[in-house]
Length: 232
Image: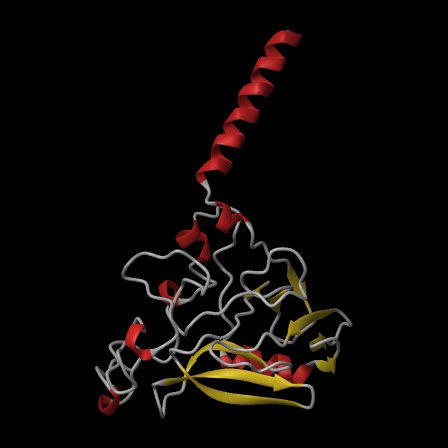
């Protein structure tokens, strides 16, 4: 019986190793923890930016709005991640949008103002990276969810970023990770999943420095940080 147990254990170990080998190494590096800040909506915030491997204080990687692949990944040919209109997924210029457009002056009008799960880097992470342990209920925060974080939490500048403390005393850290193509130390810019309906070539983002936290309409082809959220 002992010998049989050893054989079974060996087979189980080999099976697990085989499963792990099928998951690309790049997809094993990001596993966020959900932090309950005690917010009225019950929204849980990830303890780290998309792409962070070890410490929540690391910067993570950049994404353009609506692109599910990050700035440092090898991607399919039809999924560009260079941050410019020439390579943007849903339009080759601010007035040639092919999706998420509320005004025909900017492209093909469809009235969509919120990223669909298939275009949400956090929501689609499990499928696009073959990560079975990533909960697909994670998503890029809406403008409303980010607004709640700004209004209901205490923001304290610490070590190139903000410690954001919720009503229940628990906190997360948002590092000032900058943005693509700009040398902006001590500045952070984070995407929401909400389109700027009046000017659909832009989407809402939160930008901050050591003495300000404000809304920003950022060009959709820009590369910004993402901090996922999910509901309880």
